[in-house]
Image (cartoon, rainbow, N blue to C red; front, side):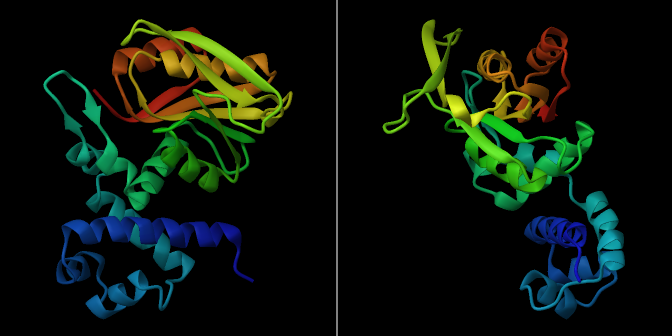
Length: 239
């Protein structure tokens, strides 16, 4: 019987191989990894899967070859006003999965350590979905408007400094149960206002926040959140 952990190892290998294939030819990868191009092609097309031991060897080589932080930086665009466009990152599923695995390692978490991945709609959702899958956790996302059909909401209101407007986030009251361990995930941490609101939702509903993570973080904002909330806060790359 194939173990679930072994399947995860194969998935991680394929994610890294797909990312490497964006930068290198089959021939170049063949020389680096020591495998014929035809074998690499069959791996990528899902016709065969390498053994666990070979996967682990190839993952080590691919980690040296593929820099997740560099790939993310190359896909980010910053305009003249300092606003960051992450759309090209959020549409790359393999990149999101590899970024999530890096954050799992940084936060010193293992599969099963958290019950809920909590995020805010809409940009936080793609990364949070990937994270929830990797951690085998439930996904809860807060919306800026009440959803039709949901009877009872919990609401938190905060001041958005970028606009000077009071904004609200809503989650169904029964989406978080007392004692649920929660990881707060977002695409970007700037000043931390949205993340503080998510933390308040988790605490007010008697959940247990275990940490917070993002793809991109402004270092001062990340450090302030960690100091203030007293939980680990990490980003894959920092500005």
